[in-house]
Amino acid sequence: MAWNKPLPRPTEISAPYWEGLKAHEVRIQQCDRGHSIFFPRTHCPVCGSRSLKWNKVSGEGKLYSFTIARIPTMPEFTDEMPQALAVVELEEGVRINTTMVGVEPEALKIGMAVRPVFDERPGEATLLRFTPRAGDFPSVIKADADEAPAAAVVQEDAAPKRKISAKDLDAMKSLVSEDYSPWSNEFTVTQDVINDFAKLSGDDYWIHTDPVQAREKSPFGTTIAHGALVQVLSSQLRIPLDYEVVDFNNMVNYGSDRLRFPSPVPSGCKIRARARIKAVEQVKSGVQTTMEINIHVVGQDRPSVINDLVILYM
Image (cartoon, rainbow, N blue to C red; front, side):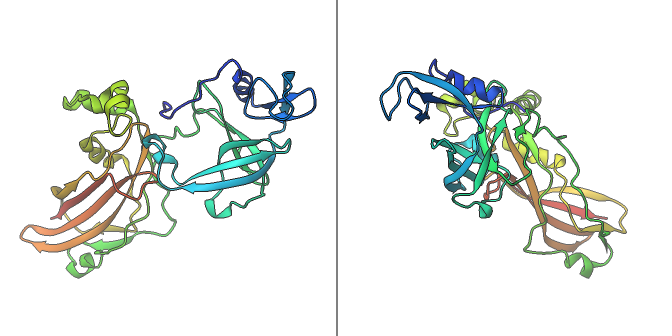
């Protein structure tokens, strides 16, 4: 997946730090009087010495402070919500702004021991993140770490699904619920996917296909997927239902009773879906169900698509 988030721009002063991360090393400056320094600069802020050198350190330290962000600071970060924004104090005493990975927000504790994680996913730069020292999270996040098969099937529970006869109206009506199913697998809506849909549909409006213009003019700060594209991508999302409708000759997608696009899907974000049966009724040609399918950007509470799909069992 192409990295769609902002990246650092190394300067002459900070370049050794970023080169170190590429080599899976944490490097910080130290002056000739033994003071450790971060962020990179031309002189020691403690004693004023300009005699500085770069030293490799373990990168281990403790969690000095953190906050859990549940609303993305930029659209591109919606797939990381909730995000554990943190300040880590290294053993050398310097503090680094970072994000915590491989840990649930509830498990974070001020003072907990942490170790570095080198995130290679951006490609042109390696980012420094941290994880609990005692955990088993890998020390390197590989560039292809989130490139799972797009339509990977959600693992089903070992228990067999309930068989619901389409000829049993009461049984069908028992499926109506206010509760949603578990989440489906995830699918990454890349710029290539958006561009392919634009070519197919003829809708190549710049807000979808021109990242430069979208960054400058769009209220979303980046390109977004077509609403119709996100709806179509529901076919890539396997929603784990605990029942199976049987005893019918034909099943027809009868259309949508309601279709809305409440929030955008920025390019590069992951989507997932869940569903519930909203209504069941007997009609002349069979039994008609209305399944509400909600597609969300991963980490977002508000859905990007709400589709009341009408299915006719005959």
